Length: 583
Image (cartoon, rainbow, N blue to C red):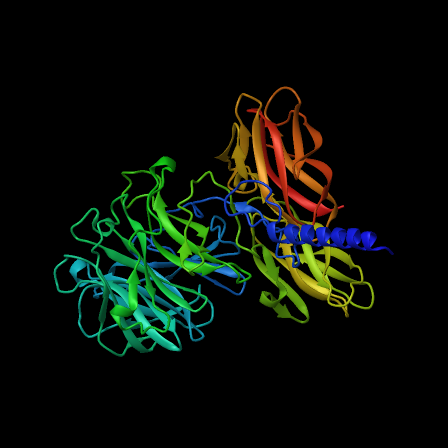
């Protein structure tokens, strides 16, 4: 081979390598909905994706405290100041959940009234709820703690008394901070006995119930944005944030009764002592504040949680939609936390309620390790369905050495068998089935043939109201829909709906089951595009106004993230959801 051919071959190989590296690093960004991850090559399947929209709950949920553990998100919040409620959800969207009041205060005590901002925490193997309360007189607000009797956050709690730092000063919004195997209590309090300002205090703890040293003043509300709406001037709603060895305390400043309520940040220097105020620095500007252009006001009093796969940090906060709402209409919202090159948190919100947000990584996967095991069967509980319907179920399994099978039971009724094709060593196999669900919470029990192992299950449904509506399309509440609503178009016939986080474990032919209602008198046609390419046109016949018909569509999808765009939505068409199965 001559030198010229060798040089040309080397150049070709180099060009291919560069292109492959660019493909891996840059990836493909299908769509423009918020929080796109844009993975180019998916090495590990982490759920079917999807999007959600704020707020994440229908009822008022001021001061949300959210924890993710063992397959579930748990939330508590200020529930009318009268008791403590905990909600349990498969997703960060708390619209369809199990909820329970876990504790009522006794009458006639110093903690019988004005229960504010409970904090649910899992510390050293136990669940605790820290809350502020008084006897009806605000000056008597102090911090108290409940300890769970069992390992169920929705179970019984025992009242364990006051969390007392010895000063007996006004205190609210307390929670435990764990740092380098030491516990600390962080809260909002007054310096004296008069409501001049609320400061950030910290004290060491000997255990989750006991403060073991004097309180230390960490920070006061001195910036102009912190003092908005005052006096009194406010630092409250403290929340602990950790990332790559760094420690932060987020807090809310300005009056909570004003639209100026915002989220600020304290940062501990590397190797610093949390009890030394000079080891903390305060960021001058808030991380999140109101946005009048999109009608989000008073974002604050947040907590931090993780994505189900543990790779992402999420903030959950409350905000209102009206500039004069004050303490009314405060509902929980969520978004992913980003990080800059210096390891500081970045919040891209608050986001408009119309913005579709990619769900936390790994959400929607019900892992077998979190299921109940009895007599070799796996039981998955609390699977919500708004109506009696059929749902697509994806099984993740292993069956090395030979084909196998499984038997499914839905709500204790045997549904039938599922064939599990042989998988290569360490590979995961995937198989879809459609099963009937009842209205409310459902259960799925899986009985496996010997030699098979179940990794997880998931419901591969994409609710249309959570997708990004644009160009004449809009989401509205609909009691007949699968989720909280449906998407319609206006009278221009140019409505567009974008599913931008549509994820599949392997490339190939898939079947889409599109639920739509034609409210008009004539047939309607919708154009479906896949990853920027026009795929097919579907026809929807006229039908009953609130009845959604299912249209089947066979499409080719890439491994990983795909984008599906539906165009030509008109006022006659309502879209409910898209289900996906492997053809």
